[in-house]
Length: 318
Figure 1: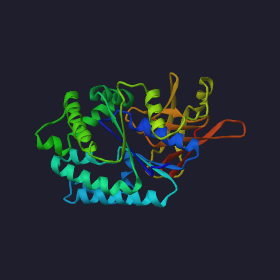
Figure 2 (figure 1 turned 90 degrees about the horizontal axis):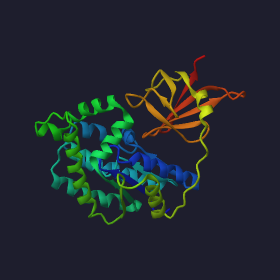
Figure 3 (figure 1 turned 90 degrees about the vertical axis):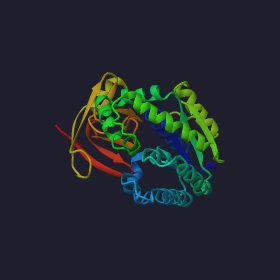
Figure 4 (figure 1 turned 180 degrees about the horizontal axis):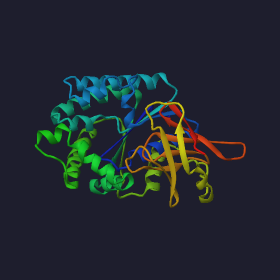
């Protein structure tokens, strides 16, 4: 693998960043290439992103310097590691700078400095473009009505809207924001000299997108282990109690809705579980995993809730 860093960025929620980046992460593992996937919420990892959350939330005056230092740490880490680093919705940080209403010229200057900082890792930029309204609707349909309500409240805190005296309450206002940001992203990335792959994810089928991504990296798709059949999914239903503490729910409930399992955490209306094999599931659009434990009689006794490099144990309620 020539690239030590593969960056997934895109126009808006629902554009497919997590879908394609997690797909690549799994394919690299199946191919025998060690890799590490950094999801957006991994920005709280102080090893690679020291001070980033505080700098962005407080719109600190040194925010650009903090982000550049974070990029340097990430590159240094990738060069020391035998893993390929994959970032999802983190780099190139343009979205955060746009959200805090930083002047476009200053974001452009930051972009040029960031490109230099990333160069030693020979990055591949995978940028996902498309119809913003269609992609955002896709995110809302996956994540539920409560997510939409919470999202409007969240965006109301952005300096971008406050500076314009806008209280975002309409779908069109959010779409306009992401369309403006997307145009800026594409303009800035056009100047980058690293390898790039720009994909339209609302006019292209998922299988074609996956094929284009693997072709760019010279890889062939590997078959994933077969998931449990419909008749076995009922075994996974039930309640689970946390036995290790930590900043995770005290209880989890797994339910079968139609052909899919759901867990009552992460997204406000619950999260669909994507089968990785006969016992392990990914919370859709996240870097969270549920790994189920079985008794010698093939009954489920509990699970491990994996978030990044941490695992939390749960026992199934009888």
